[in-house]
Image 1 (cartoon, rainbow, N blue to C red):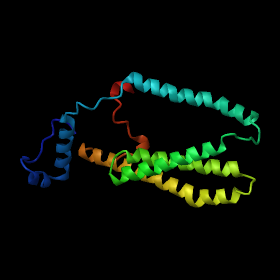
Image 2 (spheres, rainbow, N blue to C red):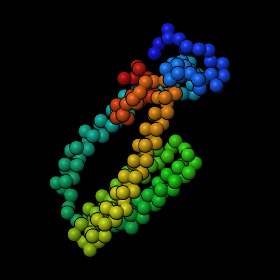
Image 3 (cartoon, one colour):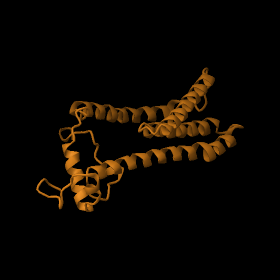
Length: 199
């Protein structure tokens, strides 16, 4: 859509908006979105974006030889002196993730997306460590069953809900801006707050 296009009728009230054709409504929404003043929103600066990407790529590059080294040098079993603290601390963090996800969902906050994603990741980590660290012990069967029927399903539910909320948010913004359909998948959607100069 461009500025040369015209609405087919004058808009002076809410009922006028409701009576517009879908094309005119989309045109009006696009104009309003472009003219909205959002002085409190700042685009991510190019330097910050590049620094963040550098850290992420550097993490991948450094972890590859680190993982290879650990897989060849670590002993098959190891006695930990802080076993109780490690697991109770992790479960405490997991309980906080459950509580915050529930609170954000109950209060209908956008942070529910982040909270649900964090909860899902922690549950996946919990399942992984429970199963791998109990392998070959009397707790192996219980760990596998717990992972299959509790941790993994709840993790998938949390991540699925986070994806659905994010998708609906994008769909809503896409609609408000008067953009055409269909809405692209999240994996193809450009970051909203990364400016053109930061690509």
